[in-house]
Length: 155
Image (cartoon, rainbow, N blue to C red):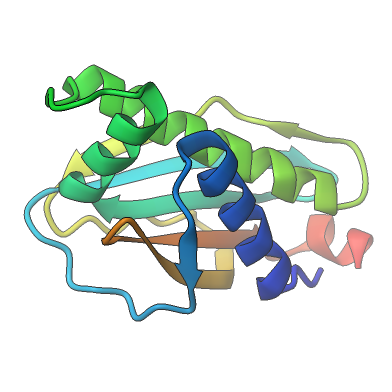
């Protein structure tokens, strides 16, 4: 199953612009992450199986949370950051789910925060890895697909 990078980049740009009011620059070099990282992921299961992951540092996640919630100068709560990052992954995952054939379901989002994170989906390979910058904050979106019959049946 081929998921075009350009389509994923278009989906991400539309989400960030419509939901956060932040235009994105696509194809940006992934800047080194500072401090703790925030990864938000959703899984797609059924006829096609994979995951969509939004990756950034905590400072970028706070920028996105501030924009989505319309906070002025106050620092967003950690629970708000988790909610917003989960929702961004959910929206991106829902759009990727709509691109694949067959009966599929989208999981609830999972958000992890830590240092030097390496989130893996066993049995899956990266189909798309795109880097972006929005309001000076860099982030990446990864689309992974599981190997095996579920992918072959769709293609």
